[in-house]
Image (cartoon, protein in one colour):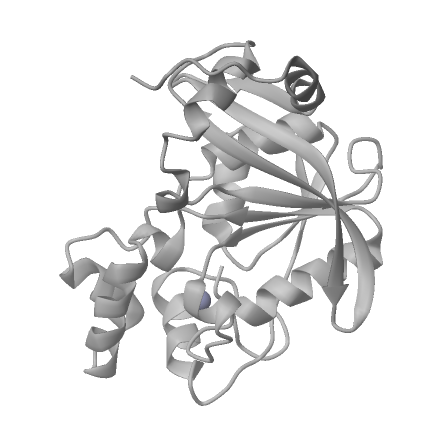
Length: 253
Ligand SMILES: [Zn+2]
């Protein structure tokens, strides 16, 4: 058992104001923010507000208890998801939303095997230009939910002739195990008005509508096709039911 810590009451009251608990069937989602986050977006500074959330079995409004668990929870081993919000997100009549699945190779290294890095930057740019919106960065979605190590194995299979769907299946995974329920709950806590979703993936639309979100429109996100990801993108369209109505042929939702 972790030692009971005596936190500075001033610090606790400061943090408590910024934490909100969202009750779920499995426990609580603790949402912290907003936190100012100016972002370098293709050479220009864009103002975003950042929120991060943590799932916990315990459901309590006593946030000191939750804070007390953090130092022994080894959280760096388990990534947390977060959301970047722009404009008057709660009240604006229209808002652009992107649910972005983490992609270590694409987002961080700029890998050309997929188009995640491109989609990430483009969606932030679209949101900033639109004036209101949110980019959800979903940390448990690596490799469509198989995790980074398994994704490395899947890439080896892909280099040896398997397509991206088969590679996941051969390793014993379902093709796509991503879950949007927590992100949906966080979105509802931040905004209840209709949203415009940026995606080429009908499964995402379905998941969000089923979760009771008012999705009024679907914007698309295409681009950055190259010799390295052509086959991957083709598979997404032919085998994963992605929509291909945009210019070019690309998606990696
Ligand atoms: Zn990717």
